[in-house]
Image (tube, rainbow, N blue to C red; front, side, top):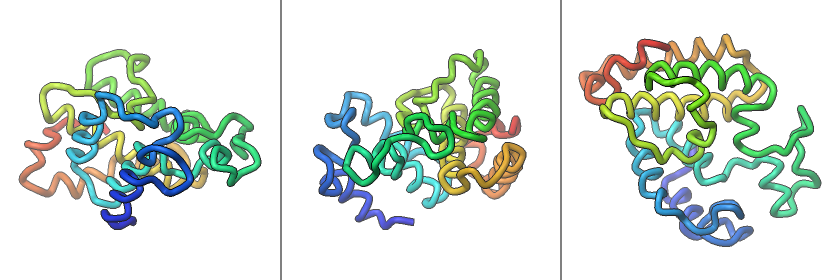
Length: 192
């Protein structure tokens, strides 16, 4: 998708339209959790295309209307579908089919973590600064989040939650063909 040198440049030098390190206005100085976020981003067991889309989401480089309005490239920060502020979290979890897709994803992550779905925060999508034990559980949660972001960014408002569930059930197949599967995600993706 984007060459690594370009992504590095945007992250460390910005695009020339915002201050700081390429982050949005609310994240101009990295918090102490950024090393965990970056470690989780690089630890996810998926293709480079999926990682680059998730990288862009984590660093707020997806051109939402909210982001475009801040740099005077859009007249409004409102979502064209529901007239709510078009933030990245809104686009991924609240707008149109995103609500149903987020519920489906949240429920599966709650099963893996053995917790109530209400404890799964949408902010995990763009700030994955958590750590779970065992490492295979961590790998499965990161894999699910990265694939959800990829699906929502690539297929926004074109496919149904049923198509998303089908995508998530088919995506692990290739990963499961390798011998390192047990090290990376164990059998945690079987719940998809």
